Structure formats: structure tokens, C-alpha cells
Length: 171
Image (cartoon, rainbow, N blue to C red; front, side, top):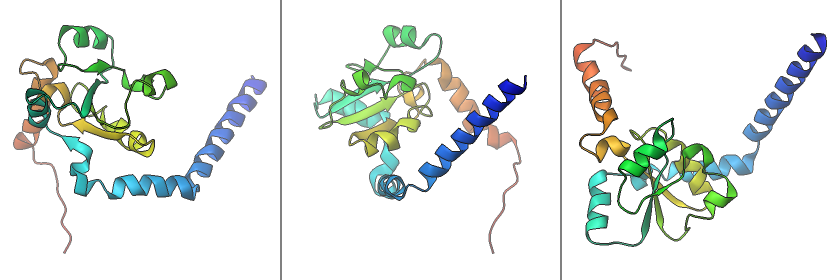
């Protein structure tokens, strides 16, 4: 038992040291800042479903849609209905070399997930790697009229209308 505790504490110490090393890595911080600070002038690296629809309609070829949904039924959901031309790479497998090799650096990469949250996790690191990465607002819930999470998203939007969540203001 003591040996297990020592190993656990050792691992915890190593992880803590790694995080503090990365936090103090000025080159990494500079790269992150370069991407994040340009976000507002680039729509925070999001595009709407209507933009993607129009690009498909006029047959633009300067973008790739990457479906990054995860979960038990994600691959089945992708196979059943996805944005035309989209490829499937689950977000938690994106940074595997074989998956990165599937993505061109000379085209916009449009990530899409269930409701636009998971895809956002990929934008900054992919931009840091040199990809022109974006997320699609509201994910598949914003694209597919009968998408199962669309009702859930609408419920989240409607919830504050019936609540009185506290707000603060600066004077």
C-alpha cells in the first residue's frame, strides 16, 4: 500500500511539474496568444451552417468538413447522416499522425460535432499546427433539422427565459 501511494504521489508530482513547465514555456504561450488574439477579427474561428451550405452549393473546393463527433453511436450517426463530403475523425483521435495526414494545410478545415462544443477544443491547437481550422456554429444541431440534440440546444437557449440567474455589473 505504501509503495502504491509513493508511486501515485510521484506521478502527481511529475504531472504538476510538466504543467508548470508548459505554463512557463514562453514560446508556447506566444503561439497560443498569436492564435487567440486574432480570434475576434476572424469570427472567433467559427462559421455558420449557412456559410458551409453556400460553399457546397457553389461547389467551392477550398475547404474540408471534418465530422469529429464522439460517443457510442457517433460513427453510426455519421454513416446515417453527415454533411456532404465530410470525413470522419473523432476529436479524441485528431492528433494521431495518420489522422493529421488526412488534412490539407492549404484548405479551411471545418470541424463539426453534435452541438458545436467539442469541435471548439480542436481549433486553437490545430491553428498552432498550421491548419486553417474553424468550427461550425451549433454543429450538427445547426445543420440537420431533426437532429436529436437540436431540442436539447433549444432548451438550453430557452432556459434563462424562465430563470432569474443573478447578474453583476461594474460601476
